[in-house]
Amino acid sequence: MKFISLQPFVPSGKDFEKSKQLFVALGFKISWEDSDYVGFERDGCKFILQRFDNLEFAQNFMLTVNIDNAAQFRSYVMDKNLPEKFGIRIGEVTQQPYGKEVNIIDIAGVCWHFVE
Image (tube, rainbow, N blue to C red):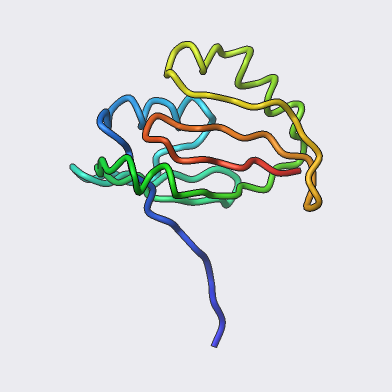
């Protein structure tokens, strides 16, 4: 038996539409959509955005996305003014034992670890 892929369900927070717009702005493409769910994909990385608002859950939910250049990714986010447009938080590039990392706290409160 072989595991093929993993696609977490990510909460949208209060504003499902704005959350969708954020992930499109981050470069994800919508691969399918329903009234309460949207499938996103970029370079083989997939997740499902779910219309779900539970702050306690979101603030305790974390994801890692492996990327090829953390500094370039951070510059991309800052150049597009995504923190101002969407009210997200982004950290500096930091060196962790597992690689260079940039953290984003999304609209719902989920912490995304973008790791080089």
